[in-house]
Structures are given as C-alpha cells and as structure tokens.
Length: 407
Image (cartoon, rainbow, N blue to C red):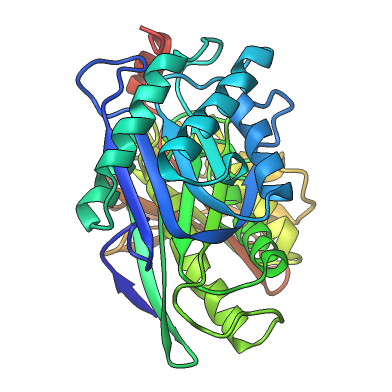
C-alpha cells in the first residue's frame, strides 16, 4: 500500500469542486461536488438516529435502488433535517438540477447536507450553486481540496486521505474526504464522508466491505455523545483502474479492504482530533479483553466519558476517571487485574497495576498528557482481543461553540 497526497480526486475519472453559494454564510465556500466520468457502483452507511435528515432518506433510496451513481452534491450551511416533505422535495430538485447540468440521471445523484437543523434550504441558491460547481469541477488535487474545505462547518481543518494498491498489475487508487467536529457519537459513523475509488468491484462486496469496516473505524470515535441526524458515508467505485472485477472474497478483496481501512481510520482519527474546542486527540486502546465486542465497549466507554475527556484537558493522570468509565461500561471484569498506561509518541508510564495506583511521577504524567496526541492503554488481563477508540478532550470552547451555533 502506497500512501499518496490527495482526496476524492485521486482516483482515475473523478472530479470535484467547492464554491461559495451563500446558503447560510457569506464569503465562504459552502457547496461541493464530486463527479465521476463513468457510472459508479455505490455503497453507503447512514445515521442510526430515528430523526433522519431528508438527504439521508434520499441517499438510502439511491444507494439501495439506483443502478449507478455519478455525482454527489453537498451543502454545508443548512442540514435540511426536520424539514418534512419540503425538505425531501429540495433533495429531488437538487438532483434534477445536477442531472440537467451534468447530463446524467436524476437517480444517479447523491445529496448531502450539514449545518443548522430545522431550516428550509433556499432552492434557488442551491440550483445556482450546482451550476457553479459543474462549471468549476476538475480532476486536480486543488479541486479536491476545495471540495473538502467546502463541506466544513465547525471543523478547523479539511480532512483528506488517499492510497494506492496494486491488483493484478493494475494500480488502484482510493481517496476520501470527510467533515466532522461536533455531534460526533457514532451509531453507524458520524460525519459526512465520501470515498472514491477506481476499483472494479461488485456492489454486494463493496457494501459488505464498507459496513464491516466502519465497526472499527468511524464507529469507534466520539466527541460529545450526540449522534447526528445527517450522518452519511458513501463509497463510489467507477472501475476505471481496469482490474478484473472483484466478485468473490479473494486476495484482491482483502487488499482493498486493508486500503479502505487505512482511509477510514485516518479520516476517523482526524475527526476525533478536530472535535469542537479540542486541544488533543485522545486514544484508548484496550488489550487482552475476553471478546472483541467487549474490547470495543470498554475502549468507547473511556473516550466517551466527560470526566476522562476533562482529565485529558487538565493533563491529569487520574486512574479513578478511567476505572470508573470501565466499570459502568456493562462489561464484567475483575478490577484487581487491570493495568493502565499513559503514553504519547515519546514516553509511556504505568499508572495502575493490579487495580492499584502505582508510584508514578505526576510531573512526568502531566508532561505525557500535554501532547497533542495522547493514549491510554488498558490491559484487562482476560484474553487475546483488543480494540481502539478515539475521542478528544473536553474544553471550555466546546460550550462556547455550541452555545451560539445558530448565530
């Protein structure tokens, strides 16, 4: 696997654009397009929230029933959630406009939104934005970056990743972009995310690969415990790499899954580290758990805890916060066997052994937890399974950002 620079335009045949459409804000990019020169096989996963935004309902239909997908249209001003029939009609009109200017079918258009919930979208501005996007789209790295920037809301950085693999002598490229900073607590994944690839693969295997991969990537991140109404992750595969189509779980399939996992993991960690108001990426790795599912539950319990998140912000190696979060996770274990470690990329110390506080150096622990990326290792001493979850610290700025989000 070769890690390369790029995002949604890295794979052959894909173009993108990001423009200003004044959907809610002035003087900032707020609409994006991803377009494939060839029809794509599509797979998707969506929010587990019962309250689903209109574009989620639209996209689920497209992914499930359309023969192919060729375009994605995104706005980052208004979420188009809790908008009823009018909101769904706006999705249809957006798709119709994209179909008109791109010369494709209406049911080949994915529509996504993020932003304020409850407001109706200005259809005239959306239509004008689609025209601008179609005129601006290109297959360059810059065009992909503009698209990644245009889907941001409270994100502080754009999020992109790309890799290449060799399959039967053909170079296959996978690239992706996502946005996510607040309302991050997966019940699927939490984000708007778009992955593009020129691989040839069956729809059934593409969907299976995506659904399995989000379990240990986007499903393992949390910023604030809120699952959004708009969560959407779509993978588009146009087959232009020219590899023999993957129709069974052969070596090529597993090579693709590894590359997809790299993209999803990279983007997921970028979202967790860019949580609203965050100053640090907070990773918890549970090792030696009795089952894989219990390892996931335990690691997520730690990163989701408001007290452990505040602990990271205060650079305080407080074993009580971590043990408490493990204890209410719902997993049965022996607290007297647990060992805890804190580490960053340079140092590691043990803060708990056999359920008891160790004689560690507080100043050294504070130094470790002051890094921009910090980890807690939890050794359960129960078995051979492990899992990793990602979150961020909880800061004063999180409340400030969300207290006046609509203004």
